[in-house]
Picture: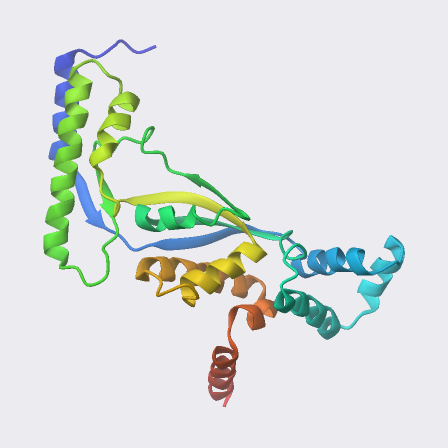
Length: 254
């Protein structure tokens, strides 16, 4: 175990961190890190268990002999009719970087969504932080506000450290003055049903105009899901969007 630092050493370390701080904007990002394999089969199988008296070997044979269009049509039909349990089995897992504004909105989607998020109790921002700019803001003015927020955070953090608190305890108390624009990382796993709902609410605006950053993040989640499972296109794209996409694809080929 390393020897405990003196108050003078703690203060010097904090002052060095303040002098070399990094306060800068970043863009939100989304990475798909894992998804359920054989997603279509899982949904199909769940539905056939509900509605068929066939034995399990017979269902396997039916799956193997059914044309792909028929299997896809059955699954898309289930989703269109809102048979949510069948398409709640498959999941997508993402690593997301966003502001805490967006992460606070994500945690409200409790059904079918699991989140593990960077902790402001255990991750002190001694050396600065990165942040997400809201739409329409003056970048220079906003950066100054973020620098002021960091100064307030470090004033509290330093005060607690010099009183003998550890890094975790000091960060836990000082975080009260951190802005919601600060960037945060989290792993989010959601069922296909939850992702469809997120797309419906946070991208298409079914319950009101989505906040821009939230729309960007959820749009990227949906885009990555479609890239991995293109057969889901009719679910995520409305009729007009689907037709527009097909026209663009046709134009590209021509």
